[in-house]
Amino acid sequence: QGIVASWGLAIGEAQILYTNDPIEIKKQTGIDSENEISNLKKAIDKTIEQIDSQKINLSANLSEKELEIYTAFKSIVNDPEVLDQTRDLIKKQNFNAAYSYYQVTRNFISELESLDDEYLNRRAEDLKMISDMVLKSLLGDEKVTSKVNSPSIVIAEKIDPSQIAEMNQTNLLGIITTEGGVTDHSSIIAKALGVPYILGVKNVVNIVRNGDKIILDSKN
Image (cartoon, rainbow, N blue to C red; front, side, top):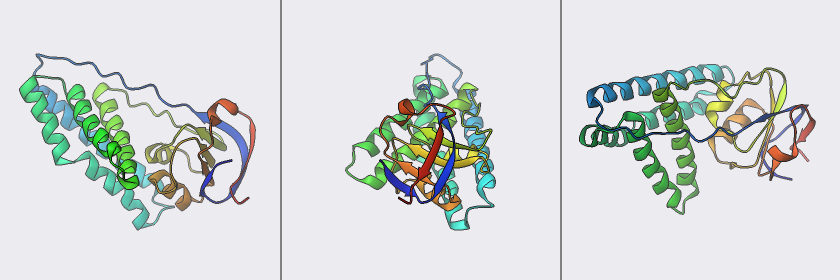
């Protein structure tokens, strides 16, 4: 039992998409601040390139309006308040770029999550996704962990728009997750792609095994 985010019927083998371990951020002090600011800019530019690539991957199947989601993601990456605060931490405290960016974005995420507003809570999830992309670039960890190499129904605790965009769309038959919401960007994209998606299924990654035959029927 779950909540329908995108209607449809899919039959195929399960592929579990495990949640990544939290990114380990170490605080370094006494560093070359100008070099760290340069590293930050390179990571921001790299993340913008990744988002542009993801947008291209989906451009054949999404409308211009739906693709605006990825334009919004670029605005989050380039948020002047986040970047200014990060640069200030680097300059004034001589912290490394990764630690500075992590501290600033986590403060913004905490503020958004504390508000009694579903829309802003969802935007906190977007900022988490973007923050992780930038941090991985800063740390040199840019491997793709969401590949779907054969036709599969993806099983996960949660899934974000970046992961969906990185997948081979031909192989993405359906999605089942524990977390998520019908108004979040992952649901919007799945619906636009015509990919059946059910969310709110408790402990799904512990119940289902890789290779299990799954019938996903969000119509009934």
